[in-house]
Length: 234
Image 1: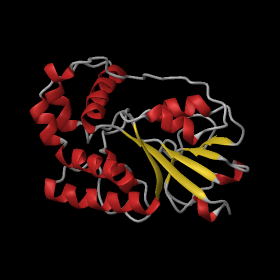
Image 2 (image 1 turned 60 degrees about the vertical axis):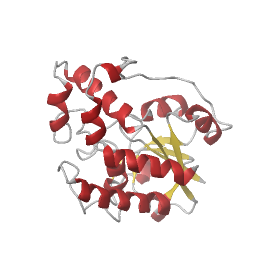
Image 3 (image 1 turned 120 degrees about the vertical axis):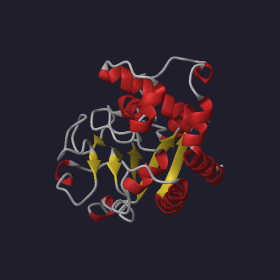
Image 4 (image 1 turned 90 degrees about the vertical axis):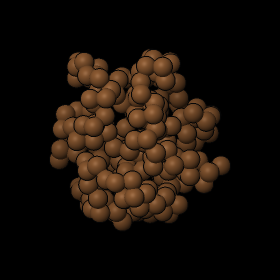
């Protein structure tokens, strides 16, 4: 069995890798540390020559499209990822952007450009878009930097739900027993129990400082998707 942990930006993926990276046959694809690979970070979106250095993998941490590994290894492959409540994730992304860019910008000014930024951190893609961007079935069907209408968003979210149902074996939720789920997933492996808070916002009452009506309207389809996946795996 090979487990793949798909790292969705701002969903504790760095923490997962740092906790379990010392285990034998655990790989961060395509290299052993956060790399740049053809300008695509550590996403593997095609038949790129990255698997020659991967020997007897037990766990692969990276953005690997379902269906690729199966071409190179005879083992069964199990796909896992973490979802986070969309509002909390969006707010975390905003504070991470300000910190990483050392820039003061209001939330109202950041939100309209959050999906089109060309600087690191990467443009703020919604969670359902990650399932589309990293699927052989759908990655070329939409532009994650485009601001679609809500009707178009719902079509894309339905595509994403199909991908979740088709390929994903384990979906963990950051707000719902996440640490317990993670420990069960990696039972028997060395756990360094490291927690990273890279750019994590520390405003515990951001509801009082940010325009929640704008946020909830902007994230309406993403929130619907999150709740549907939560229902699917409950």
